[in-house]
Length: 241
Image (tube, rainbow, N blue to C red; front, side, top):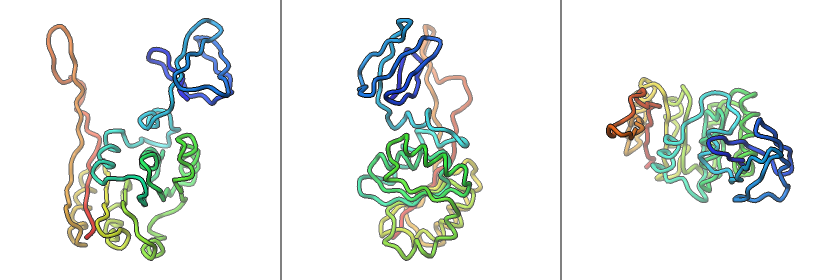
């Protein structure tokens, strides 16, 4: 659960004691979203259920997690939904894998760093999707033959520098009509993945840069924020025939 007071949020477990400069309170074991809890200093916190976008802010981080807008584009473009089987590599913090599982998919996710994989498994438990996400420690490339002999995946998501090498195997990993999505902070990786996607016969290949600008409104007028342009990365999508 989240305890929320104005612009402050604290992640808590039911039944634990929570303390801050605003006071101490005992979180009931049967606490429910929507309740108001008061610290011994009289500060009121509202209880909120953890939702998908909250994972980005409250998962333990092992690096820069994929931001919600990129996750939304991946889910929207590939149609990840209930019953889908997803193959993911470059788990990292695990926000993407957890978000796809919360959309109803079953996810197999590969992470080469053993410590990162351990943290990701803990995050899956926090996100309530431990039974839907199989975080495997290792390199996806080592299991390509075994995975290709399986029933096939509906979606392949790649957030790793060797993505172009794995895109070459997408036709063997995906079911007919399945999607591959590649996230890269660098355009060179996106370009190489684009070339490979065409070479192996994937269709509907498209690459987009994701940029988001925040709007500011004041007495003088309205305009985009003067903060740096919100570039996060490049997203390539393609489909198996």
